[in-house]
Image (cartoon, rainbow, N blue to C red; front, side, top):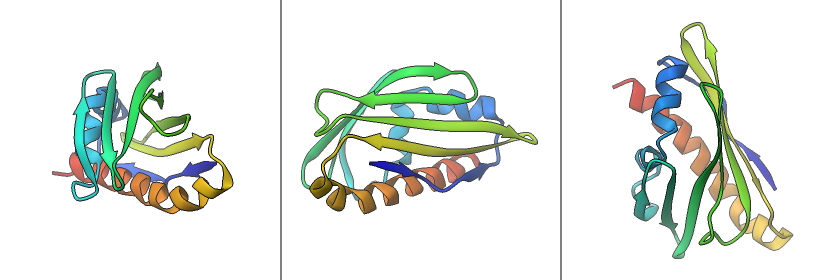
Amino acid sequence: MNIRSDNSLINASVEDVYSFLSNAENIGYLLPKDEVKDFKGDSRSCSFKVQGGITISLLQDQLEPNSLINMKSGEKSPFPFVLKIHMKDEHGKTEGFIDFDGEVNSFIKMMVKKPLSNLFNHMTVALKNHFEK
C-alpha cells in the first residue's frame, strides 16, 4: 500500500526543515494531539499510540542531508512499512511531501488508508504552520 501526502511549500530553508525533521523527537509536534497518545521520542526514533491503542514506532534508517529522511517501522508497529520525507529547495523555501509504503493485506488496507492519508496531510500542514509562527 502506497500513500503520498499532498505537496507542501514551507516558508523556511531546506536546511532548517531538514534539521528540524532529522530529530525524530520533533515528529511529535506534527501529530494531531487529539488522535495520538503516549508520544515518546529521541533524536533517532519515536513511538506513539493511535486510536484503537495501536502503537506505531519509527526508526531513522537513512538520512540524505537536505533532501530525504527515510524511516522504517520499529518492532512495536503492527505491520512493516517505510516512511520517506522528501524535500527540496524551491527558491529559498522548501517543497516536500511524505511517501508511505506499507506491507498490509487488503482488509487492513481498507481500514488504514484514509486515516493514514489524513495523518500525513495533517503533518505537512503542521510543519508548514510550525515555520510560519
